[in-house]
Length: 447
Image (cartoon, rainbow, N blue to C red; front, side):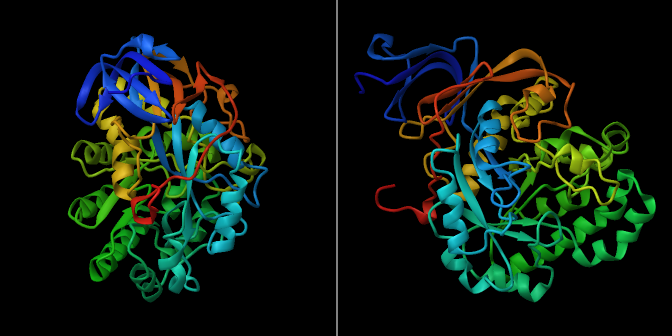
């Protein structure tokens, strides 16, 4: 039994792997050392959280921090600052930067950029290309790599793999779960004139229609079954995809975003215009309802923000020249807490969607649960707090959110990373001390 702690969280409602209960949590050397009724005098630092819920640190497994090459939109420092302000302790950054992250040198450059700048722990995806397929087996096992990312349809950046033979080769080149953006490139090209002729973002879900997503997801599932490779389908938006993915749980895991769970067309385009433009698009209310049903049925594993910031100046370009994407890492937890208060999911399900399932799917070491020996990462929330999301609160460099003006119930009050309080009541504390995320499949003996 540990006799003293660096930190004790006193009397919070803790969502642990064994259930939800009021408990103290003792932290020593950045790890969870004890859970239960603790001797508070044995701590150098005690925080009373008796009126709050203590959750495992939230993991956002899909962010685009734009560094290198697009730092005018975001960088690792501002993106991770936004994350901890919103209660997120771990992020996975996507590879579609300039240059894209497709080799060892570009990964090393990103890792070096994190030193004393990242507020969260962080990992990076390697982008798949036909040219680097033979190296992916080696690249996916480098320290700090979350896995391989496949773009089947063109989006922000230059990464694109659309042919079956190239996709199959990529699936055979490695063993870790592969994350995929599923839109059918040939159909996107065929239908692009619909967006041009329409001339408003209302035509975004017309151009990139549900069939565009369904065709790509069906193709990927077929190739995954052929090769035996496990896949993670990102930002799923349609009822048809959920029906397919629900029958492929042996190989496929599923992500949705808070945007697709919250917004719906045509209303979002009426009120937000191009600020609601993202890939795949925000669709109608029937598809949004299907996503919630998939959450209730256990088909959805993860909610990721797909944080993809662009400046307001860029977003003001006429559609379809306007870029697709919106900020989201800072609003992930507040939006989901509000849905919890609306009765759409339980506290335990929220924890699955924001931490434990991502940890299991990607094989993260020491994160995703409140367990002895795990990293002392905590997202501490007030389920009853009423707040209004505003642009002024947003720490992202672009300074806006599609949820500006939205009133929510539930708010992140504290963010603790490996035993260090980094956010309290919207105030950022200390200095950036993020580290690389550790994974089971790439662990060293020291891990």
